[in-house]
Structures are given as C-alpha cells and as structure tokens.
Length: 495
Image 1 (tube, rainbow, N blue to C red):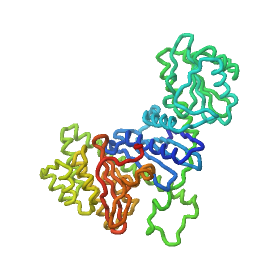
Image 2: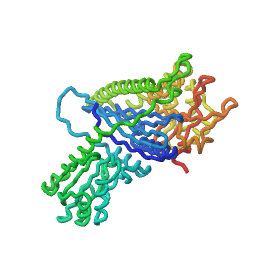
Image 3: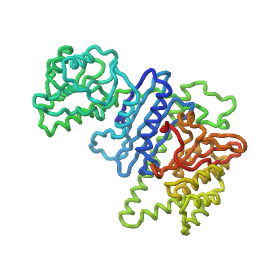
Image 4: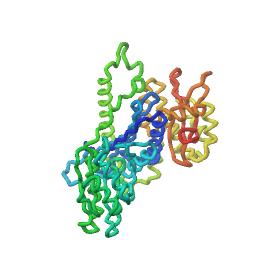
C-alpha cells in the first residue's frame, strides 16, 4: 500500500461539544458525498461509532471498474483528554500486473472541502498561528517582518510555510492568491504582494535571494527550502509547475505524518457475553489493540475481495448493456424482487400495484412475518409523503430476511449490522449524542409495559425522498420491532 494523502490536525483545550460538532460535520459530509443509494460498484463505507467509544472513524474503500488501483480512505476523529485530533489517510493498492508509468494521484476535491470545513469549525494552531485554508496577502513592511519572524523564531513549528512573491513588477497574478487548495491544513500560505513586504521579510530573515515571481516552501525543522522561479519559465508552464510543487508537498506530508494512536473499540461493542468464556479478561491493552488491528486488516482484505468481484460483475454488466441484452429498468426491478421473500416477490411480480403507503404497510404486515410492527410505525408510515411506497416496502422485505436470522439466534448485535449490509440496507446502530441528549422523546416507544429507545435505524433517500425506519432489537423476545417509519427525526441539525 502507498500512502497518497495524509493530514493530521490537533486542537487543544477542546470539549466533548467540539468532538460532537466535528463528528456531525463528517457525518453530514458522508451523507452528501456517498449516499447509500448512489454508491458505484466496489465502493464500501464502514463507520466506527459508539456512545462509549472515544473514536469516530469512517472508512471508504473504492475499487471502480477498469481501475488499475484500489483506494482506501480513513477519516478519524479521536478525543484524548482535552486534545481533539482530526486525521485523514488515503492509501492506494495496485491491482494490475502490468508495469506502466503512473501519474500522481490527485487529492479528491471532496476531501479538500472537508478539511476546509474542519479548519473553519475547530481552531487549530501551529507555532502560535491559526492554521487556515486561506492565503494571507501581505502588502506592508510590518506584515513582511511578521512572516519572516515566523520562520526565524516561531516555537515548535510543525507545518511548512509557503511564501509566494507575486511578480508585482510585471503585474502577474499569484498562483496561490485564492488559497492553499489541496495544501489546506498542510501549510501556512502567504503572498508577498509588494516591494515593502519583501523588504520587511528580508530584514528579518536575511534571505537576499527573495525575488518577485518566485515560490518558496520552507519546511519545518532545520532550515530547508524548495524554490520555484516562475519568471524564468513560459506562461504555459507556470500552472503545471505549480501543480508539481503541490505534489511534492503532498508526497512529503504522506511520508512524514504519523497516524494518531487510536485505542481499540470497547469490548462490549464487539463481543457478546456468550462469546467470552467465563474468567477470560483483556487485561493487556496492547494485546487487545493488536487483535483489533488484525481484525481491521482482515476486514479490509475481505472488502477488497468483494470489491474485485463487484468490479468483475460491473464490467460484465456493462458489456451486456452495450450489446443491448439488458434493459436497465427491468433488471433493477428483478434484482430487487429477488431479494424479497418468495411469496411477496410472486405477488408483486404478477403486477400488483403499490400506489400508497397504506397499501405498502398492509402488504408488509401480511408478508413480513418476522417483523413486529409497533402501532407508532403504522401511524407514522401512513403519514409519510415523498418516497415511493415500493422503496419502503423493499427495505422492510430485506429487513424481514435479516430478522428471520435474528429470531433463530444466528445473529448478535454486531453481526446484525453486517447482515443488513449484505442485503443492501444502510444500517446505523445508534443516533448522535445530540439527538440522544436533546430529543430523546422522539425515539422512545412503549413496549410490553416498558419504555425503550429505538436508536437503530435504516437510512435511505435524500431531500424529499428521504425516509428513516427506526427499529428496536428486543433481546427478551428475540424479535425485531419496527418502531417508526417516516422523515428524519430531530437530531444534530435541529436547534
């Protein structure tokens, strides 16, 4: 594996409120960029999140058809006492047996946008200066001296300083005037935009070779600088050379930044009581961490195998479509029907119309015999407007298949999530801390004389076509209770 992009930002003196804000920001980004119903073949998304887990992690694996490399990206938010760390790691794995010249892997724009949002939301400082995605324009002597002082006497500087001296003599625009772009969060970016600013910079640093039309990258640590002279090259070469400089900084960061130390998940979230022998303990935290990392690597290997299979299927499907042997609408409907219980597939394939939510819920109650429908689910479902009733019915049918395995005792809470994924459901085991603390009443139902919280839910759709199906896993009666069907309940986005 080759690390192609790495960024690690740590903010001090943070609270749990800051952590929740960062987790919500990443969660919203994930919904916008990787909606479950629009993920291409070979793309997998896993989330590590728990009420007692200090780590929030999103893992995205992509193995697109005809690609020569598979990519994996981990986005981590971890709280350590009062320090809050945001970390992104992107790695690429070759999938070809041919030795060919490869171009540099560009940083996905959506990752850059996420980093810029994080920098705006959480103040991160390096060498007593806030890290931003913007380029600070310096036009006076005092500003130039301030930038020079950062190079000479800034304590503990960890990030490079990118200084572009605009060719103000020829009035040439600066390459980084609009911001650091892909280098957001990786450099302090400045633009010296006048002779006064250059003089002030030279007064402090003694860098007499500083000249208009040049870009300098001063690395952290011992004085070392990378220089790019734009004035000496034709205009058509300036942008490509600037991109080459950006790639050099990205490559250096990927080789330099150590990943944050992440503790393994709480044992309760990943082991059932029945799976742990009496007297067995996990006293050695290092052993547990090694076991967890081994399990994560095994999951990545299995996902890679599934991704390869998905890629082969997608390629074969593409060939069939090119020959005109497949009609998209019919194939999509047939595949959906095949995931349902046999009797339901038969009734729907015969042409039974599902025009309303009331009709969809009637069929679901009749055919999904492994689900227990709470009265609130029926009431909320009949009021649902926006999504097609067939979409709700399809998700309930898939959930019914998983519930059958739950009733037989073949699944625990951890494997329940994996079983949902295997049948094409986007399952979330919990809700956000904000929803739990501020809007708990939205998720409560009365079941057999006791009040329970239905946090687990299925997610589907966007905007007007968005809906959620909240469920409760009843351990006492070994049943899956459908508690709510409707729009997104109140949570992190509500005031």
